Length: 589
Image (cartoon, rainbow, N blue to C red; front, side, top):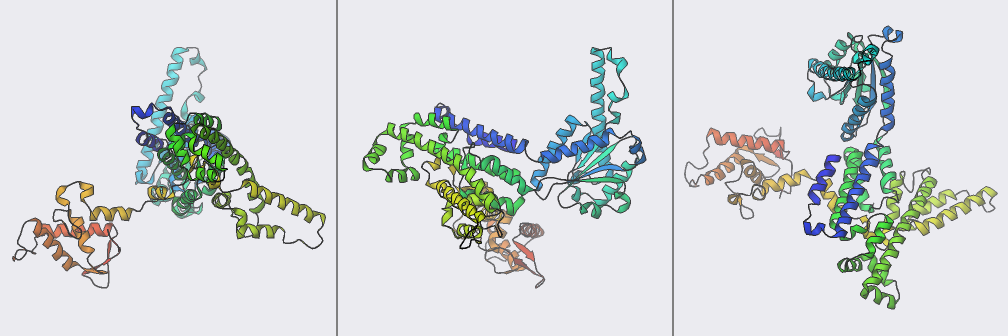
């Protein structure tokens, strides 16, 4: 996260000295840095998996400190093992393990080793990593103790075995347990079980699927050597709800997202990787784009700072405010005399802007409590007419009048479905509560786009966000293969539309030739066409007998290009005809 943020800062705010001398631009940049830091500290560091990490630390303390007890000696061959269930949101796992390592090294034991499956094709490699880590840390600790005895000689007499790291547990974290070779795991566990009294091992298995993965990977003779305890992290959807509560559904956080932008971010989350970390990166990118593309983003800050910035608006920014669609709609609702002042008097626009900013902050302050109230009232209804999650209700509220939807009407009918002609006291009270909630909804849950100056705080370029975050690699590959000049910047690759440059890379030539074929491509005809293009590159007469003949080098180049086409997913072999391949893509650039 931190690296990503730094890259954004370095690339997007390399402003000139003249621009940085503008106090409003400096204010906008400072506001962005503040909000970016707020996102990082509130979501990434403090919230994700804090409870389960604390539980893991307690588990290791309990087994590590008790390694010399009678109970430990009775179960000397059993290795305490924590099965950490992290879920399928694999991009978030690295951050979780990094936090876990830091927590354990700070509060439990310095001997923490984390290993990947790709690093451990053999059990000897795992053992080497573990022992090297322990030896290095042991030397450091003994060195620190020796230094302390030199400074305080009286401590030498009081040093006991507990001052040295022999009794500290050695924690081995298998980050991607399912990816490890089963035989490697079995051999490593068997070896470690023979030395548990000399080296008190504790294992942590990072599991993305279910605890049954341990049974699938390890036979009973090996798993019986492990004392396994299962730890469950919060689900990724619960983490997402926490992000919404902390950032998006928070009146103290001035930056807002439009309904379509939220749908893009949530769609990527639900249908791609379930990664909260990537969702937060998308939020940061949205904020970056907003501050970069919206000149009035200096007003997207805390209330007092926004009012101060509104007082010092330049003439150019006042004109920008006049051209905001929401401000234009506001002007149309005013009296003719007021409209003239808003269109001609800059100082009056600044005063009105301050009033509208106060109203916008007040709107957000009232909006979120009512939203929470309505969600609590309707989230338990059958079939969830207004959405199971509060983010779904939020999207509905900010894009349209919620009370005009059929779902809202069905919700009220659901709550009042048992009303009879003569209501009992409970039904009377229930009806009054529903009417009161309905009045609050109509008053405070109005769409955000109806609020004047909403463009200052709301980022709405969902198309740009989708293009940047939900990329289509095949389109980029097709463009590169069709127009190599724009990527290689070689003048000899410039061609007219529909022609093939003989100087192009082999893969580009083969790709363009395959665009002229149907569903099945004859390899021999494809090779003949390739050789014809190659002959043009060598300035051979296309009517001569030598043209079209191929040597082993050209044949090899063609085979390599076809293999690359298959690797990229443009073709595949087919059983219909052995000398043909099937084309898989259509509509090339």
